[in-house]
Picture: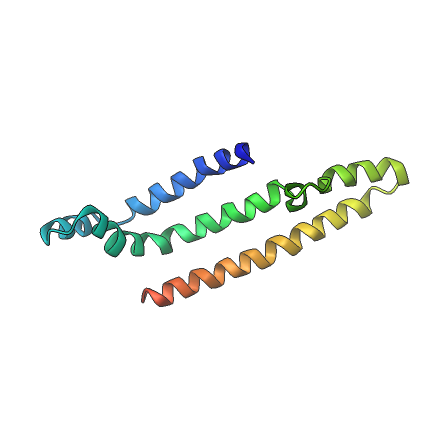
Length: 131
């Protein structure tokens, strides 16, 4: 868990950095001009603008985590791919276990991706950034 967390933290930091750099420099200057504190600048001005920019990348990495680590291994059940690899030589049927593993990953990934798209649309509507 620590290794996966550190791995994806590195990629997510780039998503956050890119979203922060997408904010025009004029926004920062305007906050300084009206004497907003750094905390207020981030909370009221910058972060509401960076969230819609960062959400697609964050969602992609969330779905990637689902694909990289089977959710069942987190709670102590044998990893899905390991089980599929063990069933193949035992039953001489290789296609069925791998197909089931793929279906399980799709059942996890597709609703998550759809939920993230809905959340992204909700954030954009809420912030008045409808396209």
